[in-house]
Image (cartoon, rainbow over all chains, first blue to last red; front, side):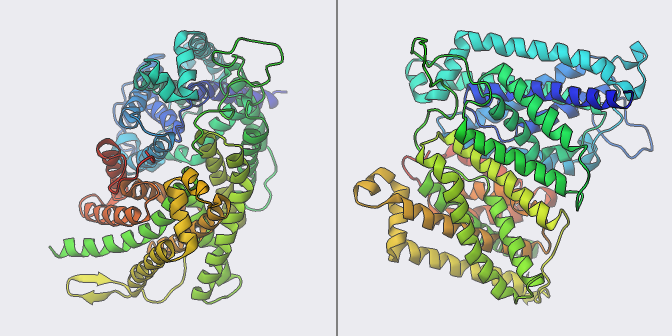
Amino acid sequence: MSTLLPIFATAFMYVIIYAILSIGLNLQYGVTGIVNFTYYTFVAIGAYVAGVLTLGKPPAGSGETYILGLNLPFPIPIVLAALVAGLFGGLLALTVFRRLRSDYLAITTLCAGTVAFDIVTNSTGLFNGPNGIYGVPTPLASTFGVPPQNTYMVLIPIGLVILALVWWVAHCIDLSPYGRTLRAIREGRDAAAAFGKNTLRLQLGVMILGCAIAGIGGALTVEFVGAFNPSAFETVETFVVYAAVILGGPGNNLGVILGAVLVQGVIIQGSLYLPTIGAESLVPAIRNMVIGGMVILVLYFRPRGMVGETRPQLGVPRRRGLGVRSAPGSRGEADS
Amino acid sequence: MNELIQAIGFGLVTASVLALAAVGLTLQFGVTNYANFAYGDIMTLGVYLTWALTTTAHLNFAIALVVAVVAMAGITAAVAEGVMGPFVRRRSPTVVLLMVTFGLSLILNSVILAIWGANSDAFQLPGTQPLHFGPLLLTPIQLTIIGGSIVAMVAIHLLLTRTGIGKRMRAVSDNRDLARVSGISPTPVVRATWAITGALATLAGVSLAVEASQFSPGLGEGFLFVIFAAVILGGVGRPYGAMLGALVVGLVTEVVALWLPQYKLDVAFVVLILVLLLRPQGLIASAGKV
């Protein structure tokens, strides 16, 4: 029991983080239909910002170099991580959210992710280059006298509170006229614009909010793991969050939490304890094939995911037996 | 001054690799009307196939390359038909098609990792001694890449202007509905386009791997954003635009490398943002593709 508890607690903490990330991505992809192929870059921004704000100055002679090192107390690093990640998300959105098709945004986000990777790796003065930052202390651990190997004892409650807050914000957006307009943009941006909606501003808001939530998830990651390095920029990291959203149910905040439990809790955490067969990279490679394959199959056979969006079609009164509900994958730009 | 001439020389090599890749990507983007995020991994798969043919099957490099190009044309067309086909026939929204190609990218990359592992490999080729052309130093390999790329571009030009399938590709790319009304069935055109895409991706990938003197499973993915920059600079679905875009991006990256060698490819991102802000339709405008 004593050996199993840390394993389950660690998996549970990752599920909490990925549930937060999935809600943020769901706002962008599931609700508004924005394809951001570098979502995890904003997680990385949040993690790095929270890391260097929590850490003190790099110890002399350690060879480590990073900016700031302000030694700020919880929860300031998490809040600032959200703000900085949101700011970068907004900047990226501003350059591409004019009257451009969804491909262009996806391409630009992909490019931005590669550039962010290059900057973080090459500018060693920023976040310690390819080695990344490490030794980030867990917030409040010393206050409550929690031993370093049991950091989940403080972080799971903090994570659950943040998850509840993030879910509540997303839920309120869901029910508000703002959320309805976002869905209208997903179903047809030109139509929403024709009804006098400022689609640029609304999409910008979603981009900022979603990326800020990514930043919060990143901050929690770095405070939990204690370290962060540029390998986080790999495509698969972003894809895992998409998998949680798509399998769980795009547009449904509880659905994407369920997706995070399935993808992060079962598939990824579970595969860590599989025996190594062949080369070291073989099990992760097979796992990624399974995740990629599942996403493609679900997109085809069950575009609504496990738990579909519960809202009735725009302008269609709720009726018994109305099978088709709006979700990305059911209708939209038919220019393919 | 000599350094600038040398940078321009390297720029022509990069542009040649980029032109092969960008033309392959833009042809498919134009004909099918969605971006393919698995393109980088198709390139990498072509490289590993060529490498396997030279090392495991002990084929001569040139023969291995030809076999790989033909095989990748078939594989790409088959994967596109099998995976993308059902979504396109269902008229899935662009967002979903992009996600499917993103998933394909992960799957292809995992297949490469599972078969060949994560380490770097290299082609053992002769012709690495540089030749002098005044202030310009280029290896026979680099000259072959430039020459091969020019031949491929001429071949693409002839295909698009002199053959029936090429003309049909241009018609479908310009306006699919109009092409259909004129009696052109898009299905065989789309198949042929994917095959050409796979072939060009393989040529581009092998050129990139040879030019970089080593390759790893992340080869294509790391280069994909530069290809997209060239494609959008030239205007989506415009093969001649993509050639021009490749030339511009290739020269700009190598000239910038004189001052910022570690960020040379990232300049492509600056080019992309400038194009999107100033001329989103690309240098060579194409109506209805923005």
